[in-house]
Image (cartoon, rainbow, N blue to C red; front, top):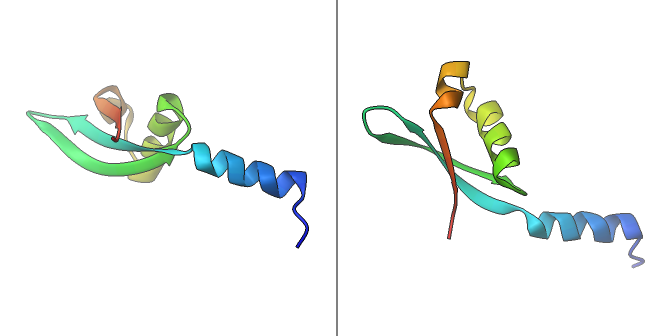
Length: 67
């Protein structure tokens, strides 16, 4: 099997994805779930899309890297 530069690059990028814990602040923090992303900004964008968050909820979003 021949490995092309593109397929090697995809595997390399996939290995860089990290798991991020997503919560929203209410009276207490409410855990929403996890997303996979390269960095915190990308994790926020993924969380907004995945959990269908409103503008108000986006302001109260907390994203932290998992262990």
